Image (cartoon, rainbow, N blue to C red):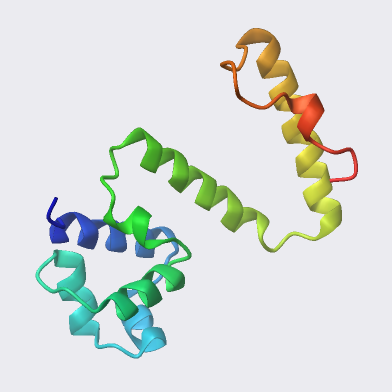
Length: 131
């Protein structure tokens, strides 16, 4: 299946905007031209794999997310997980432990109302009390 450069460009642009980064800042930080960033986002220019990986790293995502159809439910799930990880990455252990406890409580209560499909994790078995 050929790459859809317009979709990739749109994915790059959307992620950049989610992170509140301007085209100018992204270009400057990655040592590429602002014109190239604009062309990428419009889907009219391709870059080397090395540059594409640098863009994905810079946008705190991966190339799979940037090349995937954003309407695919699995892609949406992966994006949500990436966004959660972004929110968590600067927290200290104390705050992470609080979030772990909240998440564990939420999953346990949700499982009582909407049981997880067979084969998925059992919250109480897999989440350690010490984080």
